[in-house]
Amino acid sequence: MLRDHWYALLESREVPAGRPVGVTRLDRRMVFWRGPDGVVRCVHDCCCHRGASLAAGELRGGGLACPFHGFVHQGDGRVSLIPANGRAAPVGDQYRVEAWPVREAHGFIWLWFGEDREELPPLPFFEDLAEPGWSWGSAVDDWPIHYTRAMENQLDVVHLPFVHRRSIGRGVGTVVHGPLVRQQGVSIRFWVQNVQDDGQVVAKRPDQIGQEDAGVELEFRFGNVWQNKLGPKFRVMLAFVPVDADNTRIYLRVYQRFVTVPLIAGLVNWVANIFNLRILREDKAVVLTQQPRRTHLKMGEKLIPGDMPIVAFRRYRAERLGE
Image (cartoon, rainbow, N blue to C red; front, side, top):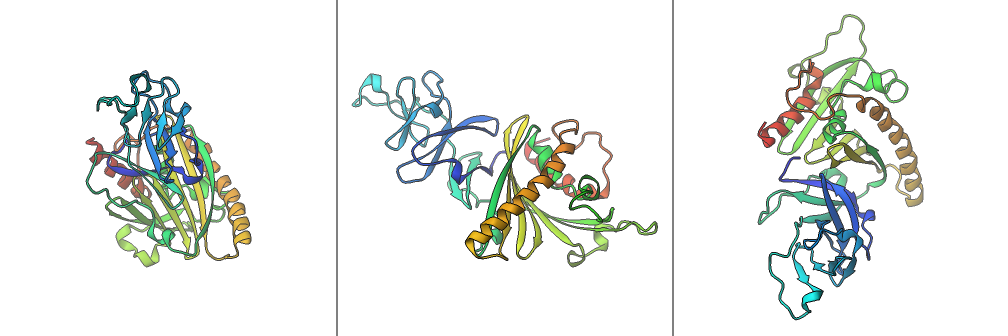
């Protein structure tokens, strides 16, 4: 797991006021809750006393009380009350659990997985989708596969006319020009153009095409968000949430701003998500067959130029993992 990145881990609606929510994310048990101020907190879902699940406890003041012996844990992980010792008794600093900085924005709950810093970097959300005027709807799909496989599927610009030959890939040319890849910071942007194979055309190298000629633009941002810019008024956005070594949760969103009437926009988003969920599950059927289940920079594959976005993704990970 890459450290020192923001990860979108839950949608805001999944953490209601008044009760804790326990989940597995980033291969760790975590518990989220909202304090009296509505701000979300997150700590390790394991009481420092006897290891009980804090998610089974109850909110008390601004903290979370363990269901076993009532130890009250605050959002920074420290224990503020040990009932058996009395409310007047001081609590030593050793009584604490791991806690993570969280922020809520754009309908997601984001968690900083990494070293403490005086100033954390900005969230890796897409600036254009943060602009006013967009409406969106969401769907969820769980994949029993390592998150690298799920992420790489959306970086694969060659599979469209094969995996999706009965849907969005119908009629799409099999020859891929480029793709043109631009990486800066946590962002990998790439452009792709598919053309029909007439028996004479040969795929162009990236240096033979310009951004304006390359067609569809896609972008992935570390830790775990991706978008497909299908037009100035329509986007598909995904958040790939690492659950554990064998499972990934995908949040699928459709963003659009060509329908502005709220009720009608909600219906359009709902219908679009049904269609896009079908497309996502076409991918899923193939990705779940891939071996090995986790990817690395070098793993014996015979890659082609069309795989350059995947290579950029793997290089970034390898550098930060010290591989």
